[in-house]
Length: 448
Ligand code: MG
Image (tube, rainbow, N blue to C red):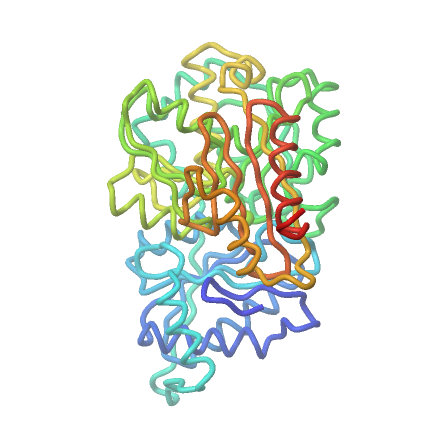
């Protein structure tokens, strides 16, 4: 699947070196042959695609700063630090082992937005590449310090007190799912003086389970946290932009809480504007309320959140899928950052993870999807718009029905012929009822 935000597909079935090289040549042309930072996650197919990217970019005259296997946020930060013209990350994020893809970044280290992505696609389709001759092709240089610089930047944040965290001597079970996080997170935790029990911390790309850090995929670490009597469990996805936490009781506290903890921590030190996406938990709104600061919601997708944060000078933001963004570091979702803020918060407040989790506003999010058979997405949304016309509706991304302590978000999928319905309410039953209600309204004829 080629989209404005990059490429993603199953290797050998659609995603081939040719597809990747085509996009890389387009991106190299778009960047006018400037310097490009190139990173990749640990997937088995990564090296092959990495070579295709490198060939495509150097053929356009781009010099490459090859930073090797590292998290996506490390690549974003390296683009900024090295004043590159852009960045390419070879990753399929949380997708299973057979997938891979490219995430493209501009000179600011942010992912390309729709307009920029459109431009790259246009070049790819028209094949208007700026090939260089022998004396103009680019050179790839290996750069091995990007991870170290990322860690140092986190430790230098004014919100992180290294020595204080070290005094807690956290015992942590860490699951990197054999992804790129394995090259960074253990070192970060060592710096924090943690005793680490490593689970799948070889960057081999051989994922031992579904790599998406959802509670249903995390039974092994949950059990291990209990057996080891650890203070917490830490899980990152293969490219380490998403963070999930496990309490000392061996319970996954849910990725929504990752962001809520970071927001809580930052606002307690520096109250200011917050940005989240339309489907993120309203925990953040509740946490922001006492500070009287604004919470702005954007379309789903890191680039939308990041751009809004830059525009309104937000102090913290992110997405409910465990993605924390702190502009003081860079404008991208960053799991290592989330780890640092969590450990700092636990230390400062002398709390356990379950105490911290219990201190957060209580909400439950439920999700369902509706297959679009006879109905188009547009008709379905129109139906919702009519049925809920009296309510507070938000059209930032699909339709969102906003109530005092709950919301229902109805959004056509970009990739499948389905509509996603996501609801949040103080209890699971209420949230489920909201989802069912909307589903009935869409699937049953109007006069029913
Ligand atoms: Mg990811």
